[in-house]
Image (cartoon, rainbow, N blue to C red; front, top):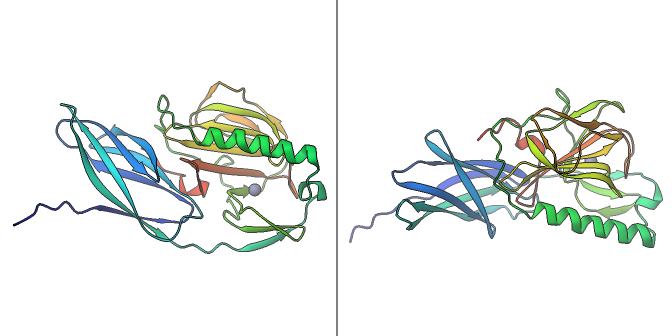
Length: 265
Ligand SMILES: [Zn+2]
């Protein structure tokens, strides 16, 4: 018998990157959701396509990973389309760093604080909201400044620690930091490791994180515009010199924030 096979749509992505999916519109299509790594990510209608952004964590095993698009039609029935995401290995360098000892051998109070804060931020990254979705392009928070060392394996004072989940943008203390896109402020306070920190929710499970600020210019709950100043570069938290640590989480995945720059659904 002649089967009717729909070939899977294949996307290729580096470990630690965001990918923008574009699925063709079809007649009677009412809603699209993508299932990726046990998360349900809504897509939205833009022009002749349905689009969304998925995150590939920096520790994802290289190789082919299946995803699936669920197409809800006008009459309520759901059709499935196969998607394959080919994850390509990336090598990340190992870097020794020297910081104040209290950031490596944590005292009891600091250890409890950092665990509590990590629980709080991970809970934020686990949420997928849809009331605000990115309609404009993601921008670099300090225009013209290149980011460094995303994914680097780090040895602090001789002890291995978690890989560097963001990019460091070097700039003088007091340099304005701009929101990478429109978003809702979901955290704006001092944290143990990241110092004065702002987290923005851009919808679809996309969060941007700005760390080590000398000053926070954003209030929790407010909606900031793309490019709005949300704080100033500083050296608060675990740092060796003033810089902006800029990170993006996409459905929880740690991705190079620069992989989102220019993405515009
Ligand atoms: Zn950093």
